[in-house]
Image 1 (cartoon, rainbow, N blue to C red):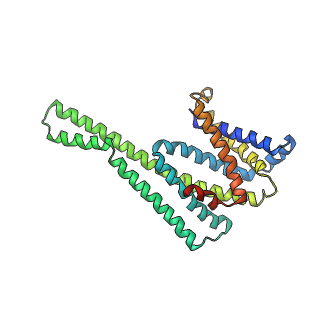
Image 2: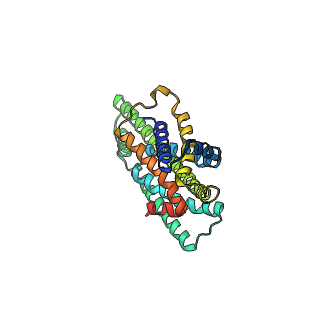
Image 3: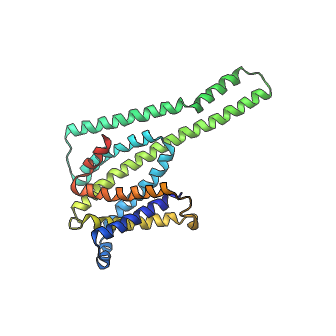
Length: 261
């Protein structure tokens, strides 16, 4: 299925739920949209983050992705100092660095697991057998098998590295976006309800995802959808609503910390 279509529908569900739960009148909706320019920043950031997430999940194993995602807490602390001028105690910095060290160990172990995978073992076996075999067609076939194993192994390693890079960019953007939304909610949007802020961000996000979902085949936007896809939509929409609620009443670092424990 198209990841863009999933995210577009999730934003439309969040928009509808926010309009209904917040009791937003159509006339008030126009006022919200005219004042929604600051909400475009997190909307674009979320668009990039979600597209990176779908690709990174396809390249990394679940444990590496889940643990690596927790470095968002560290980025949130860094951007809180920059955007909000918030000071973090030395004890909290130590805790954040321990978290990063734990993530590094998991990623390091995943790299070893990749090198010890059956694909790498087959590559080594092919090299050993190829070295012992004589000249002729058997040697040529073993060389071809070895070359194919090389290609697959290098593709796996390259995919792992690209996935880590995408995950790092996603977590950095996530930290920035969380702090930006917190600043927006407690600053210029302090008079707005959670539902009204969600309406502003959902409109911008839905427009961006609709544009992406229309390429390259608009008629195939909803191909291969299933009940699992609908579950992903519901989870994404609910998570989007909860993020704004958490940031309204807590802060960006505290929001991320429970998922890191």
